[in-house]
Length: 475
Image 1 (cartoon, rainbow, N blue to C red):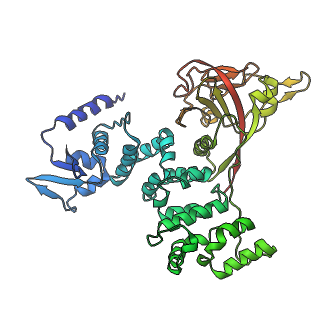
Image 2 (cartoon, rainbow, N blue to C red):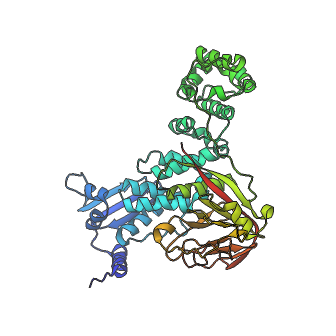
Image 3 (cartoon, rainbow, N blue to C red):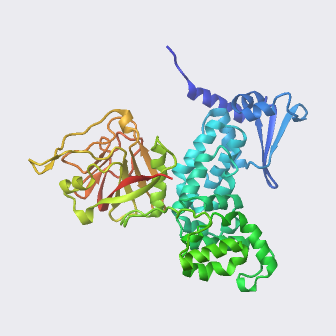
């Protein structure tokens, strides 16, 4: 019989960190007035971190003083290293009351120190728990994570968020400091959901902000040198602009005055296409895809971004899908009759259910990964309701339920055990063994099958309820 006592082991190592008098490593973190020294044991550091294993090897030139190994890490802040050293010694990470900026700093530091387990956890935590902060700081976050090769998941999240709702990103005050390579990656994408003329406007503003010698925004006052500098700055972007998708009016009013930064051949070709409808001689890029948001009374574009990213994580086929939300059912429009409900949603594939709580900013709902699939019985003019109770974990693992707070903070509740989804003649929605049930305008939430409750109360009244089918758009 094998017994594991990890709790006491973690506690003992915590005491070793706090009270040790036999340490042989000193690590100084931070810079200027915000520095702090940490004491550690080389044996533990080597065992827990490949970075320190190499750094403490005989081949690494360590700075020593009185037999003590010294490290300086000015790029890691004291609050961040406090979390790291506790994780190294105890395996414990507590992000309660830790600022979002420090959590991002923890991601960067864990990548540098090759703490793969910690890195993966923090990356997932940022996406799952800090979505609102990420979406408000996309320029800052992308500037940092674009330099981390291991951070593909968070990079993709940021790019997808921008492509789905680009206007807040392009109009943010941080936009002028955006790195050229990041901006170019966005301009190349077919799924950037923005009008081409608006993208052109943002590109021009960004380009002008990169050139200190351009001291005015009035293009009529630009010198030849100004145009040469602007052309050099924007030249990598020009071939990725869909000029043929811009209207003749917008091209005349907003592009024509910048013709000096375009090749004469391209300018004449676009003008010929727009004015005389001639066949383009240059490669015509396809129009960009954009998310067609339903006329929802509950969710907004940012909700769609966040939910799409979660659905994408559940998608075992492709991580490159975009999703179109198609309204199937609305309570205030279609009524809360269960037969009507099933006639709208049955056989429509994967779907998202959303509910706006009455007298609250809360939005709750669930992702039905399998869809509603009941056979219509013409003899009874209704659906053949049975009790669907699938306890196969493989069939339930992709369902999830969720709640949104006032500032888009999302809580995702994952299936653990029991029933992932059931439906029958007494309910419209039933996720889990009571975790989220709804019918006739009211519902209840009693955690049983999912890992956490989505509401702090057990019952609720809906202000509105909507069901959307989830249609994949391959890119």
